[in-house]
Length: 447
Ligand code: PLP
Figure 1 (tube, rainbow, N blue to C red):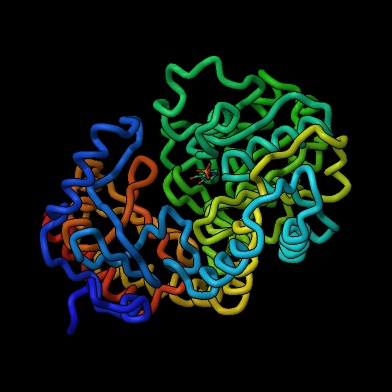
Figure 2 (figure 1 turned 90 degrees about the vertical axis):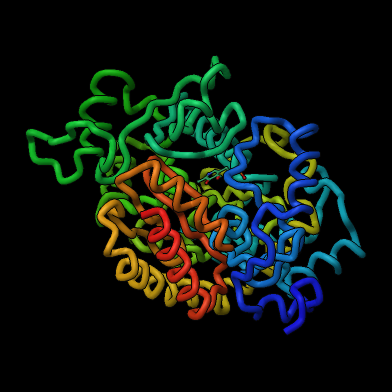
């Protein structure tokens, strides 16, 4: 077998991984980390010293020639795997033709083509319109602006544990970690938070004396609406159909439908933040489709363009009524990003979401069996290839994350208690089996 550095792109996708030649971080990675430590903002969170050089499929090669099996996909971004040839071809063709011309100010053909494609796949039956942005956070901000503009109501309800981004507007609705917010105030006003889903892990007594099926929804009605914000002053409820950074939490069946009903009763818009859960990740194009609920506005980014920066706000056409010029972006909907998105959507529609639907349950079952001996693993949860392994011991969670890295398996903590697996949607069965084996070995090493 040739050395990793000599593998072609096709061979790299098929290579046996993980394959660790030198304990990471190796000498080349150390040089990069040393430079990085001197010149890069120290606020970047960096989970472990991984320095990627190239990738293909679900395999990444680091700068020292180690091969890693990637359960991160660039944090749920590389939906089509690393440098999928069809995505690369689409970007290259577009770059050779036209790299940039502001879609906000002129009629870029590929902008409306992307909007049309997004409208076709939107989890909304009524006609939709689309505005394109550069990131998830920008999509979140644009949706808040749209909801306020169209309802003329000032307030937004979001959920504890939610992550919606780090810009000032999006961090105002984020409530996953205090450190994202501390010392950045004053944040955007008019935001109220409620416990998410089953209320799992919030240490709150949410038992409802009147026997409401979902105490977390009763909280909105009976605490927020009664004591702090009138429902007729709430523009939107912003919800992740599966909470991402909050711990890969899947809400109980019926919860999103109950939230929809609450929105309808009070004329509040439902914004589904599918930045992490969308574009096939859960085995359907959108996570909300597992729950038979239609949002009024859906947000996309991350997997949408396979790693090119693109965010989208897809809203019911009868809501996207704002006046000419009130919102736009120089780069949002940049041609190369749109080209990557069109190629990505084709790939996800024609095979990858089906693969996530098949491999996801297989992966989760395998993890449950392999991790059964460890009493400090409390749960394996998720939908499709959005999988969280929950730990009752926080230190062990951190130690397992590091032990996986040393063994060549890339996985990342999320929430208070979990490690997330969000691999490329083309993950193969043999790669899932390998990931289970390495993860279990890391758990055994941690003890
Ligand atoms: N919304 C959700 C659900 C996310 O998971 C993220 C990022 O992790 C964002 C919004 C922010 O996206 P970005 O980092 O592209 O700004």
